[in-house]
Length: 289
Image (tube, rainbow, N blue to C red):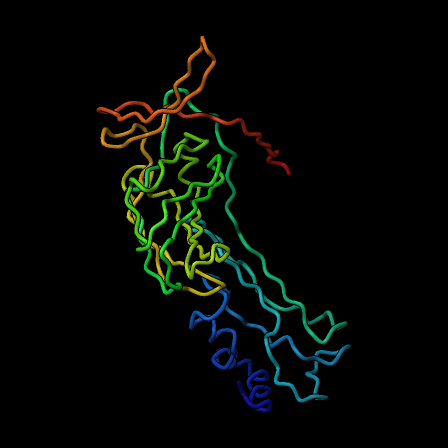
């Protein structure tokens, strides 16, 4: 949003900050109108469009204002650190009217899931959820929870108030019971039912890192179609044994009749949770790769 001659003058003086103040994408992202939850590194290179092909002289055929039309943005999950180590353009490639850009990142890696223990059974228990958002009205909001450590997605009961207590959120029995591995995992929330359209989905995500040793009270942003639309708040804890006031679903096997039935069992005191494990396949990479 600058006159072309003023933009060219700022490019020649390398006044990147002044150019960025007039950059539409930077402004709209700061206002939450696009690329919600995405980050971008500091730009310290000339606008990458529109050049004359074969040179890095800005094209004056249509008198376009030089612009940063080529960008690299990234988004990471909570508690995941990504460090950008470089971000610049490559002006030696002149076969296009754009200059290509590139970036490098330092991203921590981790080992695959360690073997399950035989004595530590755990469950992820949500003590409540409540949505505060500008999504359309509904008489039946519901939330589906997803994670790589779930055998299947978990859904809450439907609610007209976007509020759920612990009785309306199923207890989650993860496929992994290693605390260090669980602390690195995330739970993704798919919020449905607003405007009475089941195919519209808003999203949120939390890290389990703070829920391993104590009750984690969270308030995380909710996004819909690339924009922030509110917050999802609640509390969750990983229990290694199930407290007495929580009902869990257990399996009862009758070997003589080979029948299988489910029953609701009220836990008195602290009892270990029976978990139905499903087999999973893991690949271990060599450190030399």
